[in-house]
Image: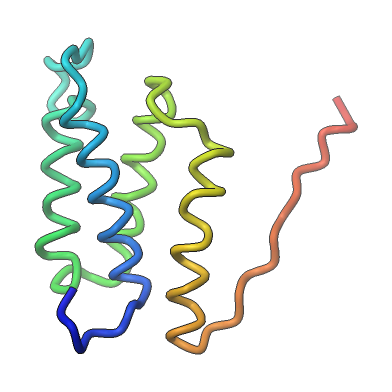
Length: 114
């Protein structure tokens, strides 16, 4: 992000992708290496695309890609959904504030009913 560029949702998305790229690159084993879509190699490529071209992509694409990466990493046990939410939420709240966007309400899942 350039010195004069504001910290917006795209910057928050790219920063999150950078964190995931570091996590992905640290992995030594990939049980899904043969799967073109789910391999760590593909997830790393997506992260790099978000980081380098995110502002040139349709506005929703980096967010959808980020969700895909998060789902893949969570299903592999490489990230914890709650911990990740707590880590990324301040990043996106900062972007919302910069852009003058009201923070979304926090939704809490009712787990009392089975």
